[in-house]
Length: 330
Image (tube, rainbow, N blue to C red; front, side):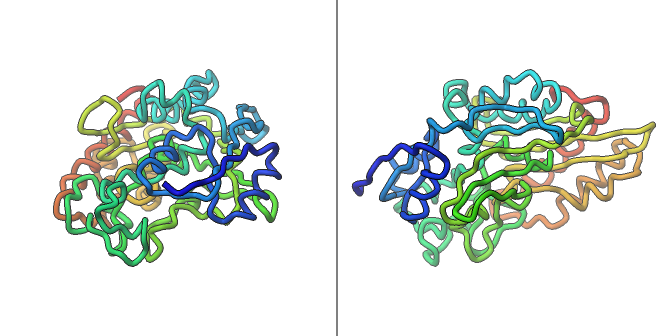
């Protein structure tokens, strides 16, 4: 292991300045993913900047929703009574994502920035474009049953691992960041990147920028939201596919909708075309079947993950139907 220094940031300004002056540094909060990557030699930083003592642990009501500090733990967010009441599918997504011990330490900001669990990325005996651009993507022709069916490229077929991020994408959340150029806000759907020709870049954060909070917009009908996760086992394994869905139904017609998927792409996948189709349609199984087909119309399966197409379609139909009936646990 390469030697690195450890420093504890005393303020947001101090953290940003340290990261800006040392391009090979890493922020560490809960460390549940960073430490794993250090142990696997995936990251070899010159400096770890500890931000865990900074004042970003609050969940605050705003006139335009809720502001969740980047250092709020997953447990604190999932268990917050207002989050459970107003954004139940966000709470359920978090609870499905990891054990209690991990949720007690993992932070909201860290969850968003966790990297893929593709086994070829984690095993340094294999080439990987995410580790070393231009070296190849063995997953594209290897064992790829867990990999992407949407938005992949020849450079990378990995999927984003987070459950929470799928719900945040469906909610139209906003990521608040602090950097050398000051504060800015990034719509959640634009925060993560597709691999294209730069699979080593997971997000649109700029050098030295630090996530400070997530903004949850007001969405009264999010109470109907559903998070459905399909996996090999229920003991906190990563999703084969997942669906976050919320419907606003007026009479028997769909007035508004949010639909996002996980386990299918390099980023949480928002099904925009399916959402547009659903507006004004009857809230019935025929409509939901058509929407599911639209959501997967661009899917390109690999040798071992073709099953994901029909599985995702069925999950979308199920999640939309449960949401139309008022939500709850699927």
